[in-house]
Amino acid sequence: MTIPFDYIGKVAVVTGGAQSIGLLVAQNLVKRGARVVIGDIQLSGAAEVDRMNKKAEGHVAIFQHCNVSDTNALWSLIDLAITAFGQLDILVNNAGILDKPWELDPTGSTARRCITTNICGTIEATNYALHHWNQQKDAKGVVVNLASMAAYVPLNFMATYAATKAAIVMYTKCMASVAPKVRVNAIAPGGVDTKFIDAEHLGRDHWTVKASGLIQPQRVVDQVMRAIEDESLAGDIIIVKNNEEPELCKLPKSTDMEALFQTSSASV
Image 1 (tube, rainbow, N blue to C red):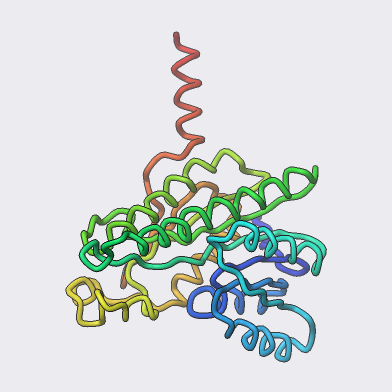
Image 2 (tube, helix red, strand yellow; image 1 turned 120 degrees about the horizontal axis):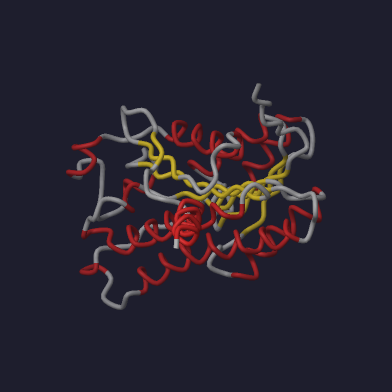
């Protein structure tokens, strides 16, 4: 019989946790018994944390201003979880931004910010957490990255964003080998009903929205929780489409490649 994942006493860090999907993830974690540290550039996170603590009638959440493209700020966020709550068990790399079409980004500044936020923020946070867990013999951790269906669907109006999410997919696949000590998974949703859709080059009347519709944020959050709880998932990407059952990406993981090469070497 599978033992249910126990959130009681667990400590999580959620980047981009002041609003939308990140906030819902933080609220779901607290509801299940975990304590959370929220990092975000949006200062509204402080008020959200106050509400969480009042509802829980205890000290279950902390907010810290954090731009994930700032390595020191990112490390400080993770350190805060360890110093304030005594440990780190879960990392949700949710922070991310859109780019602009190249026509609207003549200096490439938005593209660079998209790369440093989406790719560097995810990898540097994960790397820092991995080193923390690796220093403790009995520690185990879970990382959930937020990718996107854009990783699989080439669209010229969000080329840099799509490239960053494809990088997160491959990075997650490569990290399958760090299990079972640390399980790294990712969620790749299609268009989600958040403020992202209201970007000047998108909008709710955009042809992609009309073609596929929008996913409700809680459906994405449900899969984040699944990626945390299901110990059979490691290096997996859960694809979430509107009005369809979630499915696992079939591309090989690092563990698949290692097994393949070992088999090939043994037969030589």
